[in-house]
Amino acid sequence: MHSLLSEQHQMIQSLARDVARDVLTKTAAHCDKTGEFPKTSIQKLSELGLMGISVPEKFGGSGMDHFSYVLALEEIAKVCASTAVIMSVNNSLVCEPLQLFGNDAQKEKYLTPLAKGEKLGCFCLSEPDAGSDAGSQKTTATQDVHHYLLNGTKNFITNGPQADTLIVFAKTDKTKGNKGISAFIVEKAWAGVEVGKVEKKMGIKGSGCSQILFSDVKVPKENVLGEVGQGFKIALRTLDGGRIGIGAQAVGIAQAALEAATQYAKEREQFGQVIGKFQAIQWLLADMATVTSAARLLVHRAAQVQDAGKKFTQEAAMAKLFASETAMRVTTDGIQIFGGYGYTKDYPVERFFRDAKITEIYEGTSEIQRLVIAAHLLQ
Ligand code: CAA
Image 1 (cartoon, rainbow, N blue to C red):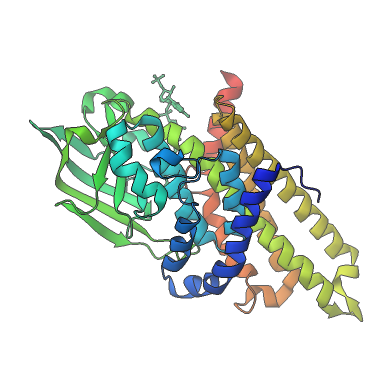
Image 2 (cartoon, rainbow, N blue to C red):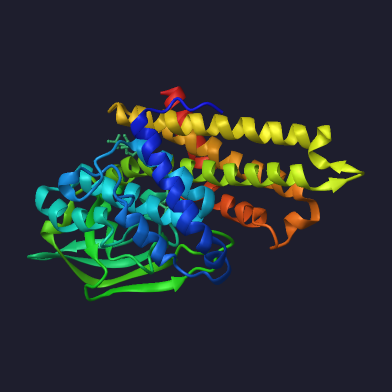
């Protein structure tokens, strides 16, 4: 396929492609097998400025646009989806809200080390009883003289076990529904913050995911992010950007399955010829390539609308919905092309399939994306 990317965009794409090839190919299968956090890979991404791609250089980032971010993320996800989500959460769900809603002091103290990759962040929104219905959360932040006292349990927190800096959403006024939710910057090291149950997952096994427990955590008032009561909107705005990132992750996984299946179709012989000569396989590959390209275009389009400074909620939801369902379809068909071998751990397609599934779930399920898209159509 021809590339219509600018020179700068081709540069960031190659940078990510090279580090994925040189570093992540060596660790992706190992992290999947052992559940080990890909520490050296994240260090390498940090050195290359990939943990805060769209953060201004003044605050330790690479000062690039969101289009650059999705180009890099796809390349990383193609080789290691676990590393990709760690990178995505730090960029989209932590650096982005700090950049958008933080004051200069907060940016100096928290954004700069996160964008440089010296610290890792996580986004604490979901709770055991508040998943898709994020507004129904029960974590509370009660105002004291100098502090808020934070109490509650957050669930399914990507980067939870490893993160240093947490963006936490909590009710500051239970009577006000969504408008009673505020956002806080919390340090893992503070008294009362604890990592709870660490999840054993189907895929993206190298990325840590856990509960985070808050028990009378004293959060200084200067650590309110944005305005008190603005937290739900901060969360939804943040997720708009995050969803484009997950779309890029899904495209990377789909591309990996497509390339593996294409190569296999050129080598595997049955009935006296390579299976790529059979039309049944050709049609599968053609469809896999077409939907993967379409998903990529939706992801690129959403990032470009974001970069243009326009509202991009609908574009982000469409990109995530289509890309994640594409990743599931393409990895399923990829296994089909490999036949029995695809169902074993001898080939990576079964990992791509397991890694793909979560993209239909986290940062808003496919059902939530359809609700968001429909709400925009009908408004
Ligand atoms: N940006 C900013 N503000 C927004 C917005 C957006 N994209 N979308 C809505 N809003 C505003 C609305 O304008 C509204 O404001 P007003 O009250 O002033 O009118 C307010 O937010 C509430 O909006 P809704 O009435 O539409 O909210 P809702 O309660 O009906 O919920 C929802 C909408 C789309 C279902 C939302 O709850 C949602 O997206 N749920 C899914 C949550 C989710 O994605 N969770 C994933 C957690 S992160 C994760 O996966 C973990 C990880 O670590 C990777």
